[in-house]
Image (cartoon, rainbow, N blue to C red; front, side, top):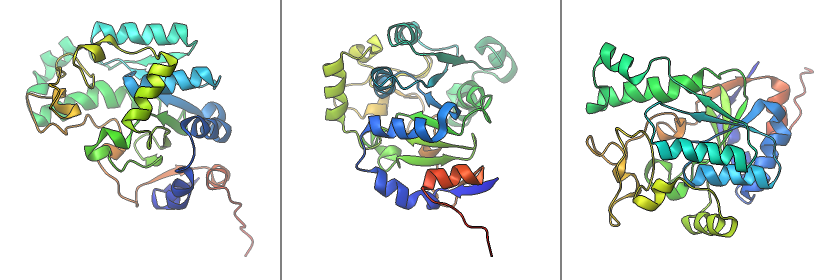
Amino acid sequence: MASLSQGDLADLNQAMEGRTPQELMAWAKNTFGSRAAILSALQRAGAVVCHMAHATKTDLEVLFVDTEVLFPETLTTRDRIAKEYNLNIITLTPELSMEAQTAKYGVLYLSPEGQTQCCDMRKSQPLLKMKGKYDALVASLRRGDGEKRSKVPILAVDPNMNCLRVNILANFTDQQLADYIKEHNVILNPLHFQGYATIGCNRCTTPVMPDEPKRAGRWRHLGPWAMYCGINPTDLDRGTDRAIDLPQPLIDKILGRKTDFVI
């Protein structure tokens, strides 16, 4: 195994800036094959990524984390997308039910520290069960989401999952997203039409007013509005020294180079 750091990806990230989301998805598929999957919470951008996979016939599994306290509309959206886009959506769940978790730890999401623990157990840990199966996860983070995501790179290392995140919509603007949804009649969570800018667990998500930031409805009871669950590593840290371990031939393939070990 060899090390691939965020810094190693600087030139490649720059070269990727002119590629379309569809081209980036094809790159992920061609580079990683069955060792790549889509990670989606099936919100607007995630639904667009799923539609793109369907439209381009890119055969990638979709990982979806069901915290078991999601809105019914979210699960209905998952089922519709799986059926109508003919996608294999793998649903991941926490070890403990919310009832069992509350009995053991109390109502965690009432404090910032508890929210971090709750999100880790109900979102991050289910995903970590898949560690080692994939070398790349195609995701839907966008710079247009603002705040901590305003500079999200197209390619980002994920040390926790030891894989590469491929944010194919990183430079997709709000207008491009809206245009794609309208043009292709993308299946959306109906809560988006009821004032929910972003959608998470039913305990910690509320609608937002027109003049509020997009994330005002997430953990509103805690503040600040820029809080994140932690399932996306770039929400927490953008250091260039972060690294993952992959086979040297795969790193060479990612970076488009050949390594000569002859001294």
